[in-house]
Length: 267
Image (spheres, rainbow, N blue to C red):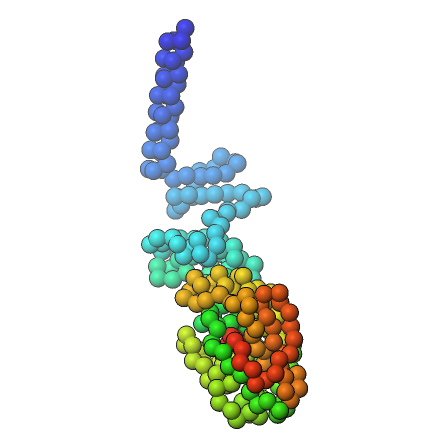
């Protein structure tokens, strides 16, 4: 009995393979119609799909997965599910990916933690822009101009760090301060760096683990847990705001003290 079952099974497999081979041969040499009404494919089409209630779904993938396709053929089509605002249907034209009207294909929007335009993104403004910090601390320096109140350098919120830095440069002639080093920094092809404001520095602290991972993967260094970082936000004529990166406490230190800092730029 066991021998009979085995033989019958083998015969079934051989028959199945024969059917598959016949189907494959037809598929390779004939036109194909996919429909529900039994009509033949159009004479000009190798594949003719007809439906009144269903569409065609190309492969769906991320921009990174699309870019990993080796030697894409001209005409290759995919749906990039993280490109643009809501995804985009894209085709390879033989030299580049385009959208379906021939314009340059959209790319995935930048995300917090991306290595982008010379540093690591740590803040997005919701309108396509945001803030980037350098992948390493610049140095350790004083805030500068102890006893002198700097007009305009008291911005605290996100978006004020650049103007704070400009005001510090205008109101404090001492070179080598934290703001001065940032303002004169040329790094990774960019020279528009500044010292972050109090709340910009806070965002860096909140995303420090993500920043650290990207920074170290791109030749940088992690934030120091026990290090105090300067902001560009002045408190009064003798002190400015700082944040330490272990417990995350904020406070004010005398401006003539030397502390670490990390430059920031906007995009």
